[in-house]
Amino acid sequence: MRASFRLFTLLSLAAVAVVTSATMASAHTTARAEAGPDGSTAVTWSFSHGCEGRPTTGLRVQVPSGAWNVTATDPPGWTSTVSSTEIRWSGGSIPDGTSARFTAAMVLREPAGSTVTMPAIQECTDGAELAWIASPTTADGTESTRPAPTIVVPVNSTRPPVTSAASTTVTTMPTGPTTTRPVIGADAVTRDGSPSSTAGLWMFVLVCAVIAGGAGGLFLRQRRRRRQSAGEGS
Image 1: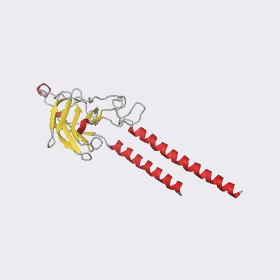
Image 2: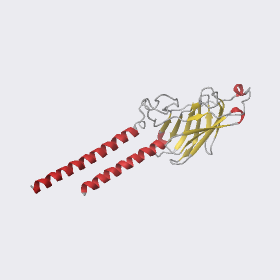
Image 3: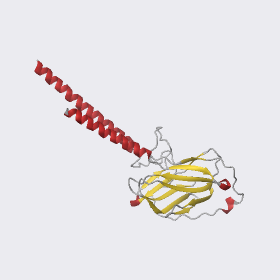
Image 4: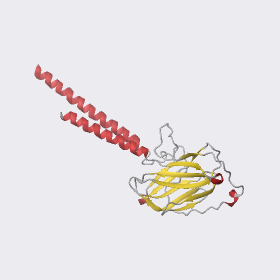
């Protein structure tokens, strides 16, 4: 009876660990694209999590190469700055577990139907960051834990003005300390040893070890009792 209860406890803990891993895996920053006026594409980045419970205080997004006429929309309480390489929102605070959306419009050089990757870095209090900059899959074919947001360029019936590329105004990005640049790489996060990049793998190994250990212990106890019962019977 005692052994059965212990096995039930171990299996319950394993189930909790699996659910926790699945929750972590579903916490992504995503992007969605819609056709806008003058040949532009409106891109919205969405997330509903902070950095391990910390509120989000900033978002940095890499501007695709060759994009122009980049303009950002500021949510209430937030301020955006745009350069030729990045869009950055700062000044606000979004609690962990609260849905948030940030939108910017730009003219992309890629044709309709193309997939465009837009690496992003989510900044939180205490200097914490979540770098969404990795390729969708790792070198061994498994899903990345921090994939960069991607969009598919929508079909747009409008065309950008001929003079827009020359008249685009770009605001210089303020300089400041940062630990990661939002640049996509084949394994940009896992290669640099991000503490979160192998969390799912280690959790899986731990769950397997706990289940195997519990099952092995229960088997040995039952075997020992059967031997004792056989000895008493003889």
